[in-house]
Length: 599
Image 1 (cartoon, rainbow, N blue to C red):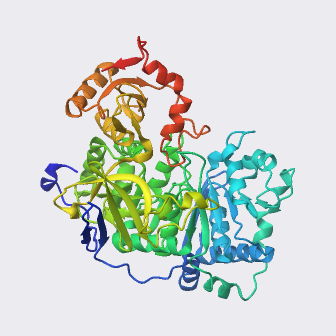
Image 2 (image 1 turned 60 degrees about the vertical axis):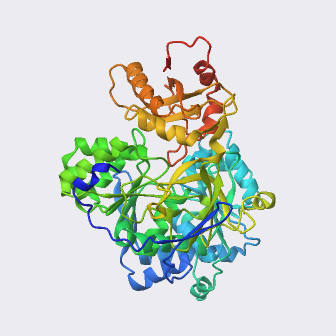
Image 3 (image 1 turned 135 degrees about the vertical axis):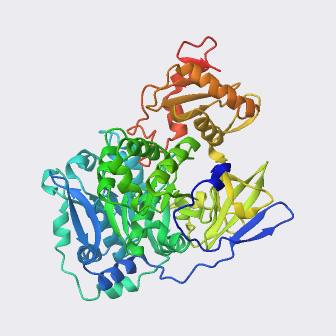
């Protein structure tokens, strides 16, 4: 990431295949990019992966989670998970569910969640995992009600009966069967999880699993709802298996999926699902991290990292910032954490240079080597990341397409709109035929709604840089277009380490301004710091589409209950700006109060 990289110690060894690309340059400026390397042969079935694990290594640990008052690890082997998922699959088959009605999973990451998920997939019943945030606000449940109406579940699994009790009793699930740990505590009919696991398995189940259609809906993964109500993205077992094969092929042993994986990413999100399925198909052992990169919750992650030396670590930038603080304080954590580490992966936002430098400095002090950073690019509609940096690079970007994915770059001003095609791309949204007609172009490429630029227009092999989410673009009152995502990323870099997150304001206004959530960094004169940094930023970003004129800090943290922040930690810009309209007005007041920093 720095020009001085050639004088620094080498990276700890990671091996990559060729990232050579084929490129077709069309007369209208459109570029079609695809890897020279083909996707290797694989079985397009997630369910078969569990069968293979149980047959070849029945006693190997697959899943672990801290449970009970003593918070000790409880373990499940491949044979344990196969036995329990078979019981779930048989129970579902006995119901004779029709019309591809799914199982709604209302649960945090847990062993029970995994068992119900894999059991449903083995039965051929689609799953729809829902963010636990949808059940947080008593008496409302607007998003959860919308999802229920959209997918019409045949079964609802709610792991924690006490936590979901109000939601389960408040929402009309029609004829859906509710499965939960303690059904006796509910005022509505429900089946116990243990009763489902006691279902006798019939002899033909394995043959049923082998005969599953890999192109049938296997999951309805929900979009974030940042531009409206959540949509249910159809994902098939072929899509999932293809995406995992892509990652296994390009990252090889560096991703650690054949070893020990510790991860907190929610399984209602494709990033979390990818790590779970990658560990399943890669043959590794998955430790469920109940911590999160949030104050008061990250301590659990630190406790786990001190016990489990991982080869691969994945988090959002906010999580990396908290990790860096902890590593600098704790010598034992630093020694254990870097002992086996081969790969950092980040997503959700850009990683700042100072944070990157802090982590690499500690890696060098601990190992004498640097650790390779990569990131992925994709969407729920492309299964998960379908582009990645799988070549040695010092530059921040979104990488190049993975084997099996073709990218179409359509000229969009001085940038390119990104479109994709391949077996990782969804066939569409559930019950939304009009929307499905809009999301593909005339060549069958899915339109992601994002823009990208070449890192080096003269060298395709250096990959692409993210250049904004088209849905986050807006016009100033002068008609000037602003790419909110680009401004946000650049502003956070400029204000590092003071700013943790930012809302970009300015739609139909005269200039851009920011609402900022501060970090815990200690800064003496905050207004002076902000003015100095942003005046320097404005000196190199003088155009109206990038220049920042005012800043105000927010004291109230982003609200999970109001869906301002996702489980993954990303901010829903549109919802947050709507909710904080009064703060926006203060920011643009003709005579601003002392809380507004005028640059």
